Length: 167
Length: 161
Image (cartoon, rainbow over all chains, first blue to last red):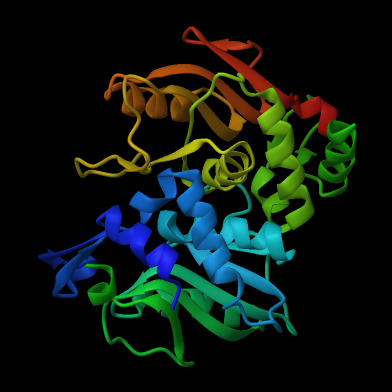
């Protein structure tokens, strides 16, 4: 149990017990979770990076993230572990190369880690898995900082904390 | 030295592509983010280019947040994430909320017309912080100043062709 990070995140109050409407009409959660609040402080962001270091699947060949919550820690892990960084959009962009992927485009034989800040229904990870698998790569790990809900993932979810641990 | 290596790598990755003989080009810096060593060098070069009194780095979108994160980690600065231009809600700022004490540098991949810089500056200054500069990886604009903000760049498009 990564106590130092847990205590820091408690101090920053990134979790509150208050009914929170989920995006895309996915219902209501009893917790408000804002992991991104912790990214503002370089020491806490580094601590998130250190804590995730030992959790990474050693076989991985790339790391994918989506949205503001995923990108900052994934960027740090990418540089630290020399894992090419795949940035996944929620809709295709209308400029540049188009498509759903920026950064590294996974290919057949790649083993990808999918990273996000919060897991609730699993919608975001499912979307990332579809994009990555659509390129012929295999998902070897789903990793999040906080597991707020019980949504399903194809492979077991790795998480650092439940909301209860951060209150 | 670092900039020479970066220039070589970005050229080889064809981040800037000429599309005709009029010198018009397409620029895709984000494909370079898929190479950890390039990303690391970008963080180093941006850190060197930003004003040393910076206390906080602000960025918006994948193009800005990725290099801003690396630079903020290396330089141990606060990181401010501004939600995308089409965000309708009231909480535009995530990560560090800049205060009056903060001196903010904006980081982005490309400066073309300056909409993103403008948008980030407004969001950040709403809290009383001062934007003291911008660092972009590729500057397509001819000026080195945008609405009073000094803009530094690592490269001009023609450096990378």
